[in-house]
Image (cartoon, rainbow, N blue to C red):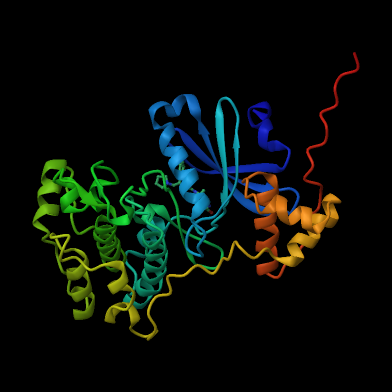
Length: 347
Ligand SMILES: Cn1cc(Br)cc1C(=O)Nc1[nH]nc2c1CN(C(=O)N[C@H](CN1CCCC1)c1ccccc1)C21CC1
């Protein structure tokens, strides 16, 4: 098995598998130079076949998405047979399981989570990206009980900006918007808002608004837009659900309006922040110092190398040292990043 993972064994110690599906699996791992825990998504290029472009889509999107509620990409390693994506590790698992374990969440707990989802989605939409597969399985809970959005394989950055029309019917049926299941061309951001309505309904109720084992009946229910309203739902929750689960995409609420919707601001009184807390343009001095001292390169040269954002071991070391600093842990590298020259057997 080791030679299969030799490409990353240099800097990572692989641990248990935390998820597997289709042509990919995710393993917990330790980044040896910093000691930080990461998740490594391992994909088999041969098995992926025609789906390989989805992986490229996900990698290119994640390189441009830097937000506190979007799972971080640290490094990409590609070999002839495999692609390894080194990503942020979330020890709380999927939001899906969290809801199932509790039957359903209270209105205020739903609101805390929903605000984080609104923050991530409005950040994406502002950059011209639509996620197109929003569901509780694609939202992970990290060590601080914060949500991180994952799985950008279906995300789209239409040519005509976020309001460009899309045609690929994709995502999970139960979360798909009426205009999408009708096979019409649709606007990704509008379809995302419908999915957020299905997500909010699942948070508040513990089951789906539109569900049927028969896909034809499921599509009919989605296009009718009729769903149960259990008596534990407050009037304000129902008003918001009505604005999100609006069959006519032109009458559906936008993420901009959603940021300051009464239900969303209840108890917190401030609109959802959509800006990212990460600034990539300003490099952190302490991290640059540690990197340049440890790698015996001048600070200036180190700044130039880091600013290339190659998503190689240097990018990973930068992000993970910064994460250590943010979490109050010492900004220290334990081993060099230089790939020691492979000792050539004496001829
Ligand atoms: C389930 N779980 C329990 C614990 Br404790 C930690 C986890 C866990 O999954 N942690 C975790 N941290 N970071 C990640 C993960 C899982 N994970 C994922 O990317 N997980 C997705 C989950 N998708 C949801 C619907 C279909 C697949 C995945 C994608 C391909 C193959 C397997 C899993 C990342 C890498 C981003």
